[in-house]
Length: 400
Image (cartoon, rainbow, N blue to C red):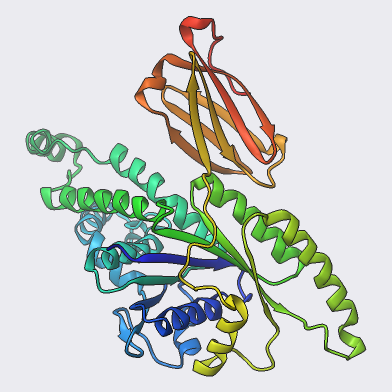
């Protein structure tokens, strides 16, 4: 049985690592074989757990293990042949060795390799639950959107016909003075593409994976979490809970904190109205730094109460496609997006949606090839795109 995967992300400094570690300890205490892993380049999971972790799962108890994924190690494992070929190509063009090392890895690729560990753990069958302490929201959004972008890039840039390459290599070397990739390079690329596709299937399966947003009740933090929620919906990832951390208790009698508590109350109202119906979990500002078993368990009890930490706390479709009598409607949930923020166009079977600079390409079923866009509207936090069969009098494709 595939493990349940829970990804935690949030703005830096909101307690994301602590909440992830507390979740993992609670899952292990419930008898589940649990791994908590960090893909954040600035690892702090070792400090939180009170044990030095490595790039491989480290036992932390009968049912619990921890891991800090080292992107460089993963990159060398998955990209070595490609990096060698690109390095040779750049070196022959006179690029200095230091720049060659930097340029042989596309931006964001090393962080992406960290996420491939999730696929390995799904295939191993060693764990019932995998809790992931992701990078802060900006990095996480790039990582979660990168697999489909990378797949496209690899498919377009690298040729796949090995026979054609074998015939073309002498020509390329003698005429163009450019070394074409050897079979080992293409095998690395093909293996990576397959891994990316498989990982995407895991991360976008709501029965297997969900994202939980961690925030503090501060205006800037809440607004960033709202934007992140929009983009997670855009990319098709399920958010099953939000965690509001470090809430000042009402019992605090010091007048200094009165205005802080009032401001936090206002932000909690914003959170409740903005994220509904996604469950909102809360934790107070604890009297001591959350490190070590005792404080992590205290935080876990506060966040989850009687809830099972591994439970799927919310489910819902982020996009729906319905077809009736020659007309179709694609509905995309885009909470918090304003009408002017959304750009849309259809090219062939691709619907391209842009929200504030973030883009997602949706591939429609082949049966939609005969349909053209006929309009779009923004309603109740969702973008509804209308299609009509070309034979039914639709106008040319356009950008609503």
